[in-house]
Image 1 (tube, rainbow, N blue to C red):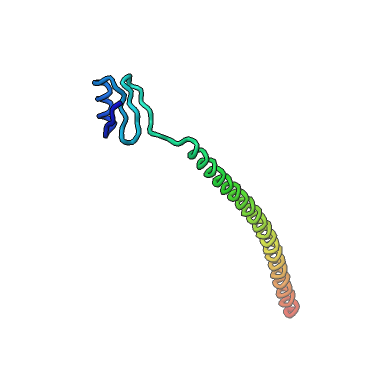
Image 2 (image 1 turned 90 degrees about the horizontal axis):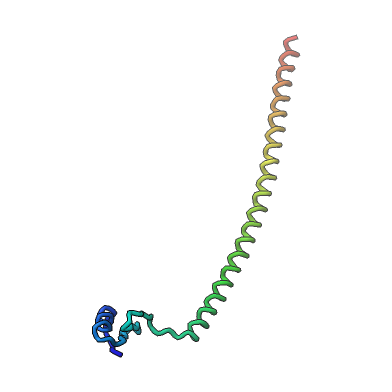
Length: 115
């Protein structure tokens, strides 16, 4: 087995010497052309990945809960807004009705004084 500084050098050396080569980063180049990646400590990385997955899952759950609460608050605000708009419309109708009655009373008053 030969130790090489770069992957390209390891590839050419493996072909020319019929020996396996390894790079400084841990990549293995076989004389048959097979390539393997650098060293990985599977036991510790799996634990770290599981911790990361649990942490992210908890964040996702918290985000979903916050989204549901926000949606409920939005629906409540929309309901209140619709109730207020209904009250405004009723007040506007009552105002127009009162304005019309005032105009009718003014017309009657003018007619009364003309007679």
